[in-house]
Length: 203
Image (spheres, rainbow, N blue to C red):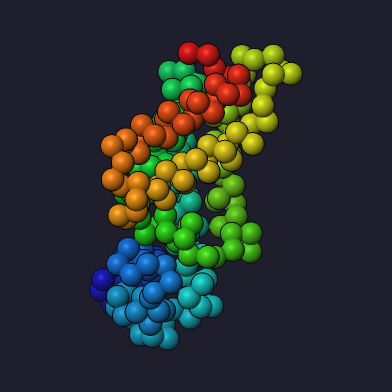
């Protein structure tokens, strides 16, 4: 990345992009701020114009990751079309797609050890992503009598946890990578079993 990135006013973004590349190569805890600066084509002191330190830079990468993640979930949900169950399951598939296609962001979001609640912008982006899953659950349960609807936030969190578990099981050479069951099939079957267990679907 050229040094001119800074002169064009894009140093903050150049450092975030460099950090994504370093995370993909080394992991979220194995790079230094100086390495990010070098990859962005600026001096070791330049990052401190925008970030207080390495963790602050990681939080910015995670924030951007959650923003894209939320955008992708929203597109996958597509306002519940063609039917809420299909749209809800499609969001689970998009979770897996994001983890596979945007590894650096995913690791910054979930594997870097940062505190989401300690950064207002990061917390807002994370909550927006969760909120789309909550909307999906609300749409799925809308036809049910009010007394039979599970808490949509609880269901969103369970599906999020299930999706994360599938990513962890199958990711980066872990034992699940040898499973004959594809990650998408495992997630969908698990979600359907869970939803049937709640009594909210019967098909």
